Image 1 (cartoon, rainbow, N blue to C red):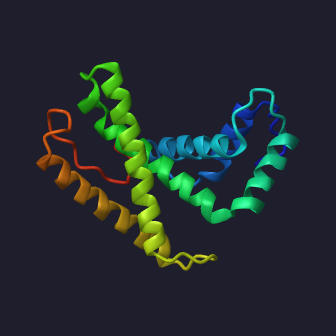
Image 2: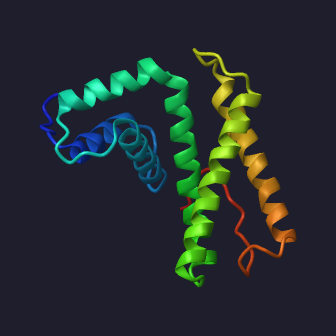
Amino acid sequence: MPLTQNCDLSVDLVAAIAEHLIVDATPPERDFLCKSMEETLLYIVRPDPELTRSQFQVRFTHFLRRRGLSSLLRIFLSLHLFNIVWFQTVQSFQNLAVKSFLRYLHDVERTCRRIVDGCWTSQEILLPFVEPFPEKLLKNIEERLQGLNRFSHRTSSKPQGNWPRVQLKAPV
C-alpha cells in the first residue's frame, strides 16, 4: 500500500489496501474484486471505525499466524463468489417477503461457502501454489455452480423464475 496515503480509520485503510492489491482488472470486474477484498479484510480484522493502521496490522498478522494464508484465500473466494452470484440472482429474490428474502440470502451465502470449501479440499492445496492451480480451482467452482443451477431448475421450493447462468467473471 502506498505509504503516502494517510488512512487512520479501518474503512479507509481497507479500501486503500484493496485498491493497491487489485491491479490487473478492469471495471466492473475490478469493482467486484475490490469489494470482495474489502469484505475479506474487514471480516479478518473485525470492523471497528476507530481501528488504526497499527491495530489493523496486529490483527491481520495475528489472523495469518493463527489461520494461515489458505484461510484468507478461502474467505476471499467465498465472499467473491457470493458477490457475483448475488449480483446475478438478486432480481429473482426481490419480490419475496423480507423473511424469505433473508433466508435465501443466507442460503446463497452458505452454498457459496460450501462450493469453495469443497473445491478447495478436492484440490488438496499446498502452498506455494503452482500456476495451473487458480485456473483449475475456478473451473471446478464454475462446474459446481452449473450443477447447482441445473438442480435449482428442477426443484419447486426455489423462488419463481429461472436463475440466471452464473459465471465467475464479473458481469459487464
